[in-house]
Length: 290
Ligand SMILES: [Zn+2]
Ligand SMILES: [Zn+2]
Image (cartoon, rainbow, N blue to C red; front, side, top):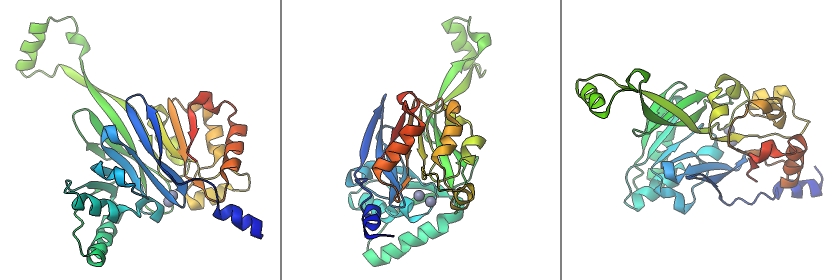
């Protein structure tokens, strides 16, 4: 590596500040760059994804969904728990792959000694296929992802009750009477609002097509250069720009946020390669968080 290449590598030019995107009533805040840090939150849904970093203003979000325990996705866990404790906020709930709950708890125990302060945190171990009820309107499902350590992705669904077809012609009082008699007059419909993949190969996309239907898709796109082989992607557990090109007709999402680009690339290179592959940026829906 020449001296000038080293400088390019060190100064990838990303600017590590939090970025913010407004989508309808949702605000998506965060930043993601491999292997520096990944963290996202959506304050209106009172939830966040990954804890690679924790800006002070993010501590008010009471629950966090961790995709896997690589350092750039979990490093800020002790700070998050400590700040909520210090500010007299409720105990946070942290969801993470079930295989790693013990180690995450041990991390907090170590910091409790190092920092000489309590770090209350409620861990919930999750597995692909799990469903987590957040409220009457919101459910999170856990999807399988493919990475080099135990990992998952998440989809946040909004759910609504609809009157069953056979009762549509009834009057208000008739519907009320039926309901009071204990008859189930409604059924549930769900809309995928936000899908978050974390680190994974493109296999996760193929196996969970709901990801393509979410209003907002937050995805990794770690590699963009032609020197990365399929074998490397599989071993590292990451996606490549080409994976998205091959699947471009499948994305129904209204907003796609691609991040987690490798720090080996400059922002200019990422921009140039992605824009060459997607000249209209998927109809303006594709956004790069650089
Ligand atoms: Zn990562
Ligand atoms: Zn990772």
